[in-house]
Length: 199
Image 1: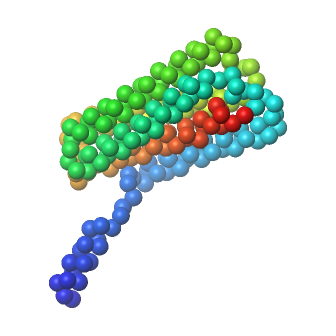
Image 2: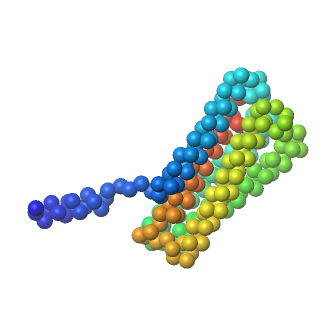
Image 3: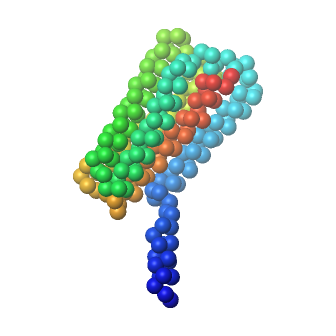
């Protein structure tokens, strides 16, 4: 075996792609996405059976609040992707900055969602109004809980990053938290048009 062949084999091994995160977080993500997909399917079946209610419902929601939260979550996914990239190159302080911005975006999402629920209450929108609003409150509150869980997870990995637990050679935990956050973002991107746009 020549030196060139050995070098090429070493290079191929070095650039061999690996799956980010760990198997546990992927199982969790698939389970969570299956749950959301099931309720999206039930939502569409209900919409098929009660078209008038589901066509009228989105007209009463605060679309601006939904759109603002969509922008916030998409931006937060960019933030945490940058945090992951930074830790892989040994830029701890830069990583911490991006993680902080991700948490700030998550807090912004929660604040807007809280304001939106308050606005709904003032305009007479409650989960007991009809089937559409029951779905709306269940799906959005369930998603809000996932956001809060995601923020707790990101707070934990931020703390661990600060104390040098994660670095260039060991960042699986941070990567797993990022994957979970991307899943939350993906669920909302599907949820937003279903609830706020498609009548």
